[in-house]
Image 1 (tube, rainbow over the protein chains, first blue to last red):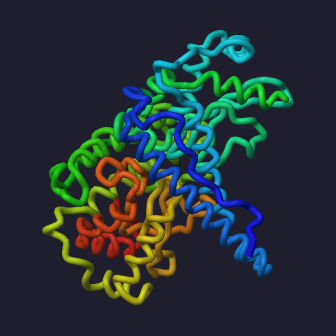
Image 2 (image 1 turned 90 degrees about the vertical axis):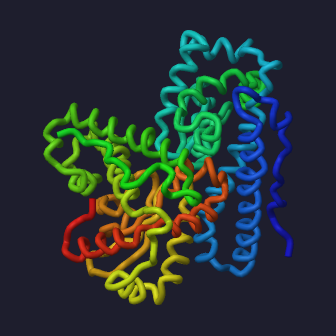
Image 3 (image 1 turned 90 degrees about the horizontal axis):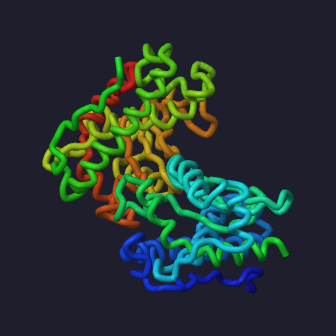
Amino acid sequence: MTRSISTVKLPDLPYDYGALEPYISGHIMELHHKKHHAAYVANLNKALEQQAEAEAKGDVSKLITLQSAIKFNGGGHINHDIFWTNLIPHKDYQPPSGELKTLIESQWKSLDDFVTTFNAQTAAVQGSGWGWLGYNKTTGRLEIATMANQDPLSVTGLVPLLGVDVWEHAYYLQYKNVRPDYLKAIWSVVNWKNVADRLAAAKK
Amino acid sequence: MAHELPALPYDYAALEPHVDATTMTIHHTKHHQTYVNNLNGVLDKFPELKDLGIVDLNKAVGTDKLPKDAATIIRNNGGGHYNHSFFWKIMTNPSNTNGPSGEVKAAIESAFGSVDEMQTKFNAAAASRFGSGWAWLGVKADGTLAIESTPNQDNPLMAELSGTAAMTPILGLDVWEHAYYLKYQNRRPEYIAAWWKVVNWEQVADNYAAAKAGTVPV
């Protein structure tokens, strides 16, 4: 039985687990990648397998019951796939430049003001979710958005440029309940070049 | 009268080794305290709601009894305050836990076949709740027991929310990551299995009796 969607794979991180220290601990990075993201990948593959079988049998009821597993795990995979590339060791950190810098400054006056606004909205996410910087292709503007659980930003129509995971597993071992401290720290390891590349790709 | 953080009925280390002392300390003094603070904050802005007790506040979620500007804050923080106040009481030192007996045991067996089968269903609800939330064992309007899970700080008192089956909770388990991550990391099923060893079945029996009498355990 051939699958119409090929098996999804856990991507390697572009850096060692400890490379984002002291902003994000190596222990968190390892669990986050090897356990959490790996589980989304495994569960997504299982759900897609079952979906193919159900489709072949014409079992629509089964297809419907698989929807939430595909949403949860597919979203988890998509989001973390983007997230790892959005981060970079601090020694390689470069602030935004070029078109991205221009857009951020025209919309939020400064990078600092953007970060303050982003952090306020992202800290306020109830329960598990993500803060996103997205690109609106219709207006040509950047937008800050938050999403619950593993709902991918793409369902809003925005193109994801930069995501910040605020599920407690993303920070709890290091920052405990103090999500705002994590949100202050993470900006030291944001890979603005990757964000700019995603913006350029979105504008094509 | 302002809502207050209730004291735990035991020391922070009392649930060791199943729920660690650091988690209990942060969970109580930081997470629950924040829900209390935020709840009092919003009630200061809407003092007409101060006369509703915590149970009626939770029951009002999803109804127009709550002003639009307060609704979400009350859902999250009124829910959080009720849920955690309830949660501390249904746990106890593992040496005190004996399993269900009497009427609540009979009700469990009647609804699920056996205590084991109830636990299996409860564990599945707790493990499969995606993201943050709670698993509940509660008494439905028809007097029978049922299990459900709710997202974030919702609970079965919030009957007016679509997707929430109304129940009076008699047992509940916090599956937000903050409830278990320091000790169990991603291994939520291990946390759930360990948690049964600290369930205060006497309190559950009291909760059941209250529910049958038409009151909500606080």
